[in-house]
Length: 193
Image (tube, rainbow, N blue to C red; front, side, top):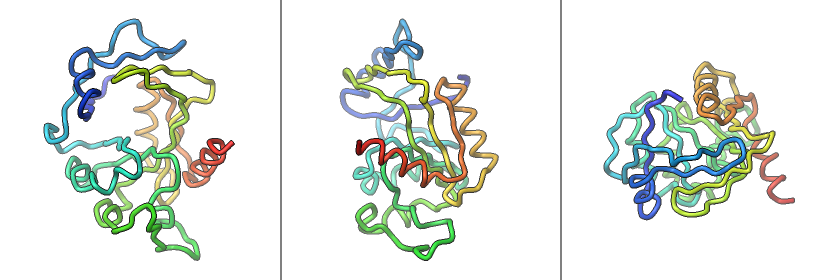
């Protein structure tokens, strides 16, 4: 889609990506040949990056927080497309719970201290996939596939529009919205059914 992209991986996913690229299977998004990508292992990155999609599982974030934050400059945008409630859930919006910390998600406060809310973009991935092997992904390609995006303070910003355009140009509809928390609850409830 014309962007300069670096993927960070370790172990078998790194070996697969750096050797043959990523294999995508799917009725619409699939590609006949592996997609060559620039893959590096943690510590081999060349920061600063302007936009970082943090796709670690929520329980992996605290241990990686300092390293991930160091990948971006002062104004870097960090998109966190994790399912579930984020540690910043009560930040940025007026609420009787404003300032409340979700200790189960950030037990030592590492994430709150490491990532300023001004650098965070919340995300929710709506794209069913199966991991068939390292760097080998099957995509369901549904009509509702999208990457929901939202600011911590729910405003519709220019940078939100920019990120949505980048994901859309890459083949995954970017869906900026004014209430990322509501979208997260919708996804949580759909996963529970």
